[in-house]
Amino acid sequence: MSSTDKLIPDDSAEALAAVETVSPATRFSRSLIRDVADYAAGREDLLPFWFGESDRPTPLFIREAAIDSLQKGETFYSENLGRPYLRRAIAAYLTELHGREIGMERVAVTTSGDSALMLSSQLLIKPGDRVVIVTPLWPNAVEIPKIVGACVECVSLEVHEGRWSLPMEKLLRALTPQTAMLIVNSPNNPTGWTISREEQRVLLEHCRRLGIWILADDVYERLVYTQGVRSAPSFLSFAEEDDRLIVVNSFSKAWTMTGWRVGWMVTPGAVVQDLAPLIEYNTSCVAEFVQRGAARAIEDGESHILQVRSELMETKNRLTNALRELPGIEVPEADGAMYVFLRLAGQTDSFALAKRIVNEVGLGLAPGRAFGPEGEGWLRWCYAAKWPKIEQGIERLARFLSH
Image (cartoon, rainbow, N blue to C red; front, side, top):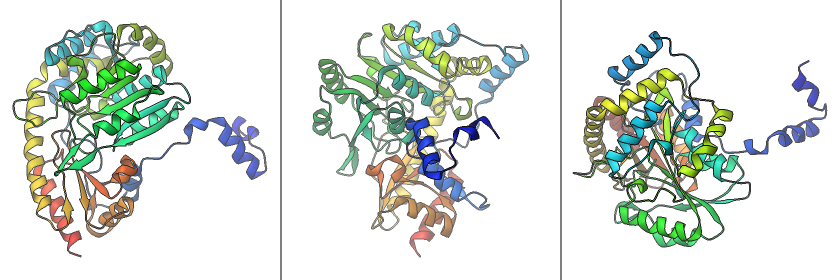
């Protein structure tokens, strides 16, 4: 008998009660994206577009930096906040990108953007705090505040004149003096909606006045398709260093490094001192060879980002146009990220619909309900794939609609 077994009473009702008291924070929603993927497991003819991941591997020059690090024996612990060379590289990159000085003392390297979201919530949110989130949104970002005990209120994006938009007045009404944090992801996963600079200014001023923290998820900031724009609007371009603002980012998308699990966060200087022990108690540090690859990516990866963005923009336009030619499909316009959020007329159960599409034509799309109740009836298609694969997916969806 294990030590765990000794703690569980024989009576099943008592056992259940005992388990529930161990960790109430674990009672959060399971990802429906994973559920659909698991449902389709083993199907050999499947065309999956449900995960937010490119089908191209990390560029060789980034991999070689990590290989060189391993060959040199750089396999030991590093600083909690990340190696100074990587923090300096990130700070220099952000300073140049956003035209405002970002000091390395404000930068912390994390084991993924996901980890940065969790650290932010652990750092700033107390049980019972009220958190307002702009949705529909990647489920991790919505569930993480709940894990640390927050009460979450969602304000949904809306479709106006065929385009995703932010209902600013509704959002401002939700941001009361009792609100601890606002979470905004732009460009948005799953819709591709991208906040405007003016909307950011209005939100920052409002949150300053009420003492509300802003947690900005900028993971897709380089994947924006407005001509002549290098990056999506970021709060970093005009916020003051002491503003209640944390900006998280990741190497996963723009540098095609999803499996590396490395990201960063920019915080007010006064907060960084509390981050080091928090990172220590979560993950301790990011592996040295991963940091070497990340540093090479951010220093020499601009041409790769531009190529990825160009290919994604072309694929987005071709996919969107093709989908709009199919009967009964709505595809609102959006300016960023790597997803099309589409709706099939008359469909109200996106989870059941996603499973039906897998069953009938072997096409894997993410159910909109995975991104909150606001996404019900919608499907997300990740278009970070080669065009022949996308084209096959369009043909399969057309076949499904013809049934």
